[in-house]
Image 1 (tube, helix red, strand yellow):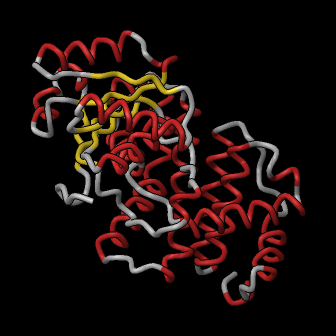
Image 2 (tube, rainbow, N blue to C red):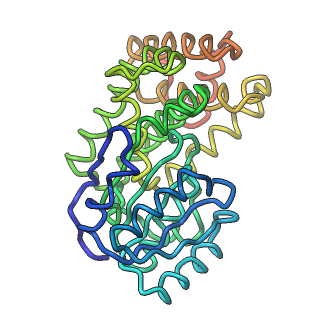
Length: 318
């Protein structure tokens, strides 16, 4: 893999799709642009026109679904186009495919999220065969257009916050099995801090379409987290605890948001001191109430039971 400019850098502002061509030209002039066909709207179309007007030779690929076959097909198109970088504009599935195609072709990538980070990454069999760095080295630039993101439903932001926290908690749970750099550890803690400290206010402001500092900070974290690659054993931990939870309390997994909140709380229960866990439990209660979702009754007994079964001594933590 080629080494690019280290950790990803994010440009955040308004009307960026009209002005970002100069930044993209610093990376290359023959982009392969990936987007979902149903999302090829006036926004994407005008963005492609801006690139063309600045002299970039663009090839567009419409994604039907994100799987290994799609990655290989996009890679073939990029190879024939002689692409020198990959641009992904769309949701988190487009971002995941963009990263995979960039890795396949050994090219830098640009991500332009059109909605907050809302889904956990899909880990392919190929990715499970090898450990990957936490921060995907192919991502050269993230362009977060605030106005575009503010057009999304507030539920997208809430799901993005919860899923990202679950993502980070799973990485922390298995990090003892990885050689994490100090920078990785500091950034994970910083991401968590921003989401836990500012997201409740950000959600309220987002609902009112107010671009507050909290909204800007949360959007930057969610946009940046699409560059992370989930270690395969972290994904396995999430699947394991979801299975154990489903066996005990189907009512806790009947809503995707509530399920991911509970999975996040279980990982927090395993790794946090009692006082810290109680603070996160309270935060999650407030979050679910703001989302008109079910509350978390009789949760700690379930968490303790699962923690003990997983070989953790729950009594020493909570």
